[in-house]
Structures are given as C-alpha cells and as structure tokens.
Image (cartoon, rainbow, N blue to C red; front, side, top):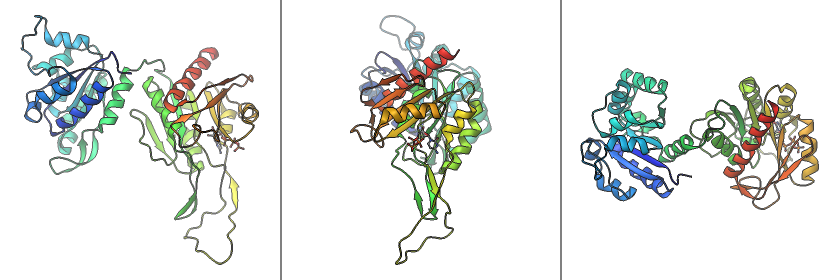
Length: 399
Ligand code: CTP
C-alpha cells in the first residue's frame, strides 16, 4: 500500500535514533520512496551512511548543500512528500516547530510541508513531562500535527517512565493510517471484539475460542479510513490498533455496560465479539476444591447486547456476526430480522480458513431484505474493508 508514496523520515538527536533504521527499512521494503533527513545531533548517534544504505538514496543533512539540479532542496523535499514522520522527535524539534523556528533542513521542511506530519517523541521521562514540552505537544496537536505517544518502561538514561520511542510497528501503522483515503472521517464506529470470560471461581472462568482478530481488523481498518473508533474488547493477546479508543472488558455484563453506555455517540456499531450466552449463576468467592463427586455448575443467561441495541436503534447502522456450524443461511436470515440489524456477517466456523483464531475468513453477508452476498476466502484485513464498504453504502442509502 506504500508503493508510490514519498515519505520523509526526520531523525533527530536521541539515543532512539538507531531504531529509526528499522522504520526506514520497513517503509522501503513496503515500496515507499524514503528520504531521510538527519539533524546535526542525530549524526552523533547514527551515521548518514546507515540511512543512505537502508533507503537506497543519500540521507540529507545540510540545509545549504547545493542540490545537483540547482533547485531549492527543502522546498523540493517538502513538496514531493506525502508524509513527514519525525522519529525520534526530541524536545528540541517539538519546541522549534511549536514556536515557528526553522533553522535547519528538517525544521524548514516541516515548515514548508503541506502534507501530514507525524511526531514520535522519545526522551527522558522528566523532559517528556516537563510543562513546556507538554504545552508544545498540545499546541502542535491543536494545529493539526499528529503524534504517536511514547511508551513506558526503562529508558536509556536508566530512569523508568514514559519516554521510550513507540514500537516501530505502531509508528508504521500510524503512517499507514495517515496515508489511507479518509472516506469515514467524522463517523464514530464502535467495534466489539474477542471473547468474554465469565468467572467460575477466583482461578477459573468460562470463555470461548475467539481470538479477537476480526474485530481488531475492523477497528484498524475504520481508523485508517479516518473514523473515530471505540474498540470494546474482551481478553485477547492482541495489541490495540493505533489511534483507537480502547475499552478493555472481561464479562458479558461489562461489555453490555461499555457498549450501551456509548451507543448514543456511535454512528455504526459492529458486534464482532463472541459474547458468552451464559455465565455461572454463582461465582465462588474461594477456589472450588475437587471432591470425589462430579460437579454441576448452573448457568444463567446473559443479556443479548446486540438484540438490545436493535431495540434501541435510531440512526445507527448495526452490524452483527453469526458463527454457525450448520444451516448457516437460514439461521443468519432469522437473526438479521430478530435483532433488527442492517447487516449480518455469517460464517460457517467448520470450514478450513474460516472462523476462530484464523487469519482468513469465509463469510456471507446477509441483508434484512433477504439478499445475500457470499464472499470468497480472504484475509481478515481485506474482509474488514469489504464490510466497511457495505456499511458506507447503507449509510448513503439511509440518508
Ligand atoms: N451477541 C451479543 N450478546 C450476546 C450474544 C451474542 O451481542 N449475549 C452478538 C454477537 O456479538 C454477534 C451476534 O450476537 O454479533 C451473534 O452471536 P451468535 O452467538 O452467533 O448468535 P446468538 O444470537 O447468540 O445465537 P446462537 O448462539 O443460538 O446461535
């Protein structure tokens, strides 16, 4: 997806400068034309040769270096760029841009750029929390600059806290998000994902095989397309996608509260979560000890969150999922009506390449009027975009 894109990677003087080598390499491998611009301090940490080799073209370091064709270097670079990413971004570059200072190649490019600019701060925790730095970050955000927040952990200076350069994967994802066509800007999408877990005693719970991959793919795809995304997720091993509001929950009851509490704010709700239909009637306060006898656990019904949303539905586009093992189409057609849905994504979880814990899915889209669209096997990311395309069509028809 980065083929044909021109990306300027600004590297400023922090110990995390070495990590940008990985970012440059990933962007180059994905087909982008990568132009690295290093500040003087950055060159104290990594040599331009590293970046020239990884990007396949000379790293730029000097505002006054005569370009071979006699053109104005910083204006040329700023004009050709689809995106500028500054990783790592020091307190100094944030301060300079926030105050309108342009005194070297990178700061003049940022000043001249009309494309999105993404800052990835990395510095000592006290520097990061310094009120001046925080004020500069707020100013830059208000002005429309983008940020990938630093992570927390052990910093190079030995201190613990916020200030580590965000994971390169997250920065890469942030870049992809900014470059995607923004056809969902202004749309609030609430996605549920993963399983729910219902407590049996302090050490045991009832859950299901959902990995959360489909829901996370939907959240990521919607964020890329510019939507405001709220991801309500049961326990999974996945990292929340960049730029989404993440609401972790455990039980179906917690998911019910999280979803119904946010329903009014949502324009689209996609319920990809595999919600437990039942929970133990009583969760034991202490660990249940084994006895020679068999154990009977009484289960009671959880509320059906999707059915409740169907009853409350106003302007929202409501999308459900159905995991079936037999008579897929008939069950799906019944569910789409019973739950008052605009679209149901039905999959036969017994097919190879479909359902839980796979990277691909095979689904049939089912509409309330009885229409169906069977889709071929595709990866969950591609399927997420197909579902969002249909959602946008439904929104258009409703207006
Ligand atoms: N769902 C929900 N709340 C529940 C159970 C399910 O919101 N308590 C939602 C799921 O997120 C999914 C859809 O309902 O979008 C379908 O779930 P599924 O388990 O396939 O269907 P059920 O309606 O629960 O029916 P059954 O288990 O009998 O197939």
